[in-house]
Length: 143
Image (cartoon, rainbow, N blue to C red; front, top):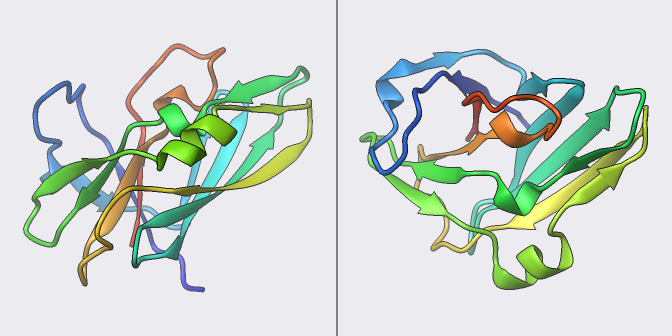
């Protein structure tokens, strides 16, 4: 599977539209937040987008990552975006992952949606991936 990632540096979005013009290429689809390494890939595009997260804890202590709580959007080729949220059963069965020190997990999250149009990408703000680190917006996008 071909992975294409874009790192997006955005200001706090709040209710405003993310500035997709600031998208810059930065393969591979990898982000490090504190001592948590995350690789994101798309596994399904239709009928609903599904992301696979490879999470490695390089900390000397247990870490908790709440995948269902990460801010996720879909951006179409025209720069329009819509918020995505995990399917309800995903939020209930995988609210967060506790990962032992120097261990890793692989998790898939299915998002509500009508699939991805050609050329669309899914962007995830991984700024909260490590709860032990102060939040800073950290977008990673995959096609």
